[in-house]
Image (tube, rainbow, N blue to C red):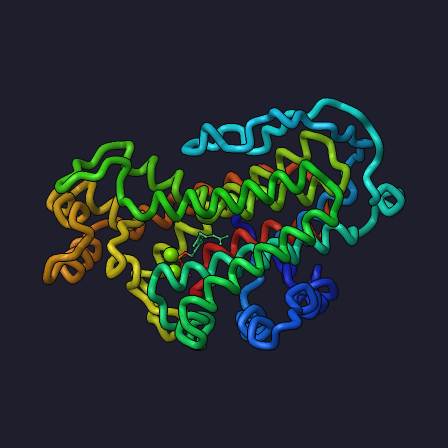
Length: 381
Ligand code: FPP
Ligand code: MG
Ligand code: MG
């Protein structure tokens, strides 16, 4: 029963590793330029939720006892396309065109023990947090945000220019750390994530696939939103879970399960995020609430409401920019079943995430992965 209460605290199972995380991240972000050093480390001062590194560490530990393979590496074709032609569906997220060459990863010696988190997996956890934080630095500029993690956002504290440059710096350092893992498949996955974040953000600039004054609601409306959501939020989680399993020398079956877990949990995570924007106060969130409509964004609760109340199309078309639009949209969403439908869809994804890892051997880390699903559904920030 996926809904049965589980007593394990997912944080506890990887608490020892998490303790070093912030310290290591701050080390990765050191700069000889004192003000760059300050801006780059700014979001490491306030405690984030560390959802992504936690998932990487839990996935690493949960897959430590599954069967191992000696992975064939790695002379990949230099002619392989580096752009994602199928970006809207992300049908084949890994899609690396490797020709086998062989040789074991540097972690082979560690995997012999098959017991614990590898140094490369720990570093991967740090890299995911770096990429996430870089995207937040840029996001707060794009969204004109004033607060983040219950403090002034970096753009407010240091201005747009420094915030953007600090984000770029984080990506640079993340790339160096990634290169040092000496694993081309993992490098490719995380590099794709960075491109996906931008693609998702671009899709979000337009509420719908086509730019119309009075768009009609179609099934594509939801598909477009979910693809955007995958790229913006689930890509980092899914591909880093996949990368964790790859670094652990896991079989393709386990690697795929790790990916599916991350993808479904990531989609649920963002659906809940979009719900909280309507239901929770800014004070509790630690960032402005009700921001999405103000930014002209139609997220899941509104899209579900729109299906039953076609008058929303006009407001979506003009991005809630006319006087009273935001208020009107809020009322229509409140009277609709949009929030319930969003929660139900998130629950479906969470169930799929749990299903994906159900064949993993029983362990505290596996319970932690399942508990993360419950936490995502219950979270209020
Ligand atoms: C937060 O969403 C933002 C993201 C999940 C990704 C933003 C991506 C970019 C700005 C593209 C650039 C990417 C990199 C890697 C530099 P939100 O605004 O809905 O959430 P919020 O309420 O936390 O601000
Ligand atoms: Mg934002
Ligand atoms: Mg944003």
